[in-house]
Image (cartoon, rainbow, N blue to C red; front, side, top):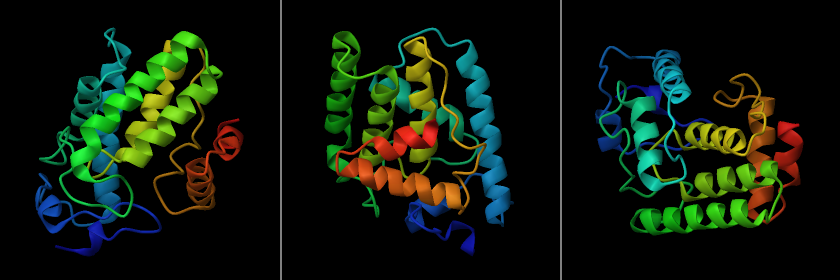
Length: 193
């Protein structure tokens, strides 16, 4: 396959099998792939406008990922089975997601953190788990926004798509995630304000 799959900066690399699961074989450039994925994400966001059921469960996460990437990848909505440069071992994904959802329900019920920090902690942990072969940052940001809406708050500003391509904003975002890995969420809080 061509270099359209070459990971840049700290993005997730796909296995050879995952690369072959690209549905649209006419895609030959990274830009075409990004545009195709963006179209699917936009469709998922339109679908979310009418979605009224619970968003804080594993099944919804899989359904949302499938809505985002179903026209692009055969593995859309399916948890990864390969090791990545980020994320936990694949066999732990389901149990760690269950723990994360239990945590976020507790944080909301007991007002453990502010709404912003609940959403950002969820976002960070979801990125850390890295449940899917790709699209984890994008689905994590959408989930953080959904949590903000659920808590009656305004969605975050993530920089107008500047987090997809290599940029200064993406570098700050990655550094903020790495800081959160050490328990310090100040970088993420600064980024979204």
